[in-house]
Amino acid sequence: MTPKTWWLFTAVVFTVLLLPALVQQGMFLDGVSYACIARNLAIGLGDFSHPHYTATLYPVCYEQPPLVFWLQSLFFRLLGDHFWVERLYSLCMAIAASMGILLNARLVQGASHKKGAQWLPILLWIVAPITFWSFSNNMLECTMSVLVLFSTYFAAKSVLNNHLGFLVIAAALTAAAVLSKGPVGFFPVVAPVFAAFFLKRTGFLGGLGKSFFMLLGTLLLLGLLLFSIPGMQDYLDYYLHQQLLPTLSGQREKQVENPFSFLLDLLSQLALPGILLLFYLVKTRFKGVKVSKSAFYFIALGLAGSLPLMLTPKQSTHYLLPSIPYFALGLAS
Image (cartoon, rainbow, N blue to C red):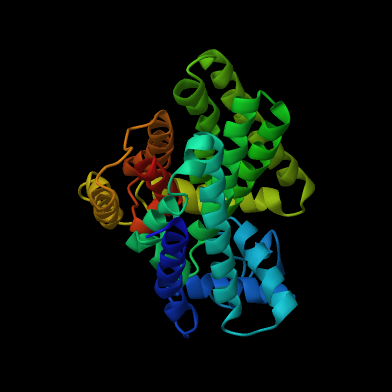
């Protein structure tokens, strides 16, 4: 089993898990709804701050932030009104997420990653059931996963290279993640402080300052969009008071009986990646295996993207999707 063979194996697994569902009609209801809103934007029904679902149900859909609808509408404008357009969008997001995983690993692990199994984090990520299910069903978290992966990449790059310019890019990507799925997209702002603590082992206060700078930049960019795009202030007001805050207080959704069940969901999603990793370690007879500092960095990011969700009364397994790549990276490290 040469590295090329493992890459081929990873590509085959990636294709087998995604393509059969992506070439068929029919999806989870939420994914169908998101595709409908994107298609409506493409044909002129609604706009960025007034996405339109149907004439009777959510004629102006304030239920989710609008960025993913707008991005997907570009595919409909370019390719036309076909059932496979949203599938192609999801496939592109899956490929982009794979690239983001690879870039994060190469940046953090450096030369040791080039000598190791570069394909491994991608394989561990794609075999998590919620990963291929979400990308097969056009969930908003798919786009958010791409944005947070590239955000943490530039945030860590800023710390490792001591360059604030990368932090501005990271802040812009974090703002885009928030515009894709709401406040859960803020978690990449902890990447600089984690990078300073786990990777550099020095300059913890500097990392903390960079995290604050990144958060401030994200908020400023969101504020600029809020006041520069017509209708966005009304969008924010409705989203906060009719969707987000009632959901967090348990008024809109049935509260979960045991918030720790979300932790069990996370462990169940990581079971298959863990089994595959164990198989690989046995196959290589644990040669050269050690727990690296990058493993702690990635797992800390995964926990930052998942554990806060336990505090919310509304929990769904696909909310874990943006954190799964970091657990895969941590296990591979």
